[in-house]
Length: 309
Image (tube, rainbow, N blue to C red; front, top):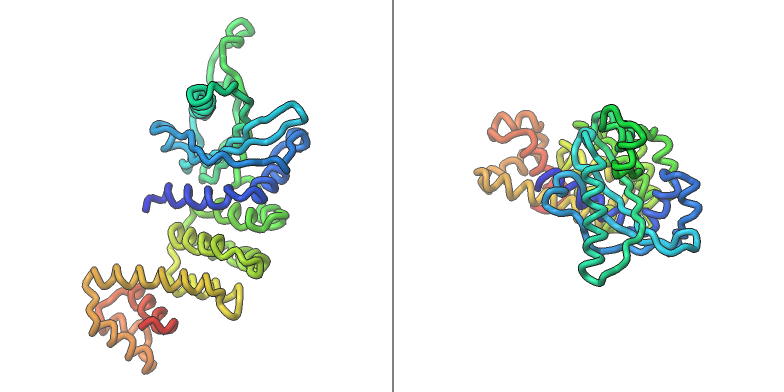
């Protein structure tokens, strides 16, 4: 799975929740604008307006909302794929906005309504907002009127302190923002483990198993943690491992186990590792005797502990 698709999937699963988007706007977008938005009227548009040229830049989710009693506006949430700032982001955003307007006109001749673009960035490089006019040299007022100037909101997660994120009212948003912010770095979950565990505890009894599964899968695809390390972290959330987390862990172990089998791990070797572990042989010695990697040994032992083999 491409890392880009991993981010896309988690982004869409998180921001397809109206409660998350509503709190996101309240927490991170200009207060004066948000006061004019009737957030109780938020509705998701299940269409995507990312074309082949734009797909290397963004993932998108589009909402409609009533605005200050003057009709509807659209709110475009765009996750920036790249780990560095775009040189000319207005170009891609202008193309995206035109895609939305043209689609509405072609299908139903819908009169265009204003679009508020919000770019969510979680790359490593610094990105400060610039206006379209900054791309050009020596503009005077006579030339400026020919430049298609417009604004967008840049939400740079790297500039938001972890404490502020963990204090977001919506804890699903807090968890997602924290993971997105740190996911570009190696072994990032270890650096945010305490905050992540505390946030997960707050939603543990809310019954949203799908979201917790998404969190496990996102971490598994973006960090270098072993299955055993994942299970250890999620055990801290609940003493009696949540059924969904356990099921996900089993699936991940099975995937790693099956991949290992395809790479030449025979049943006899797996049984040997199991027997050795149950008889107190250290992982290091099992690595030396079996010829398997430490990761493969740990995955087999994790499966043994779960009663899967």
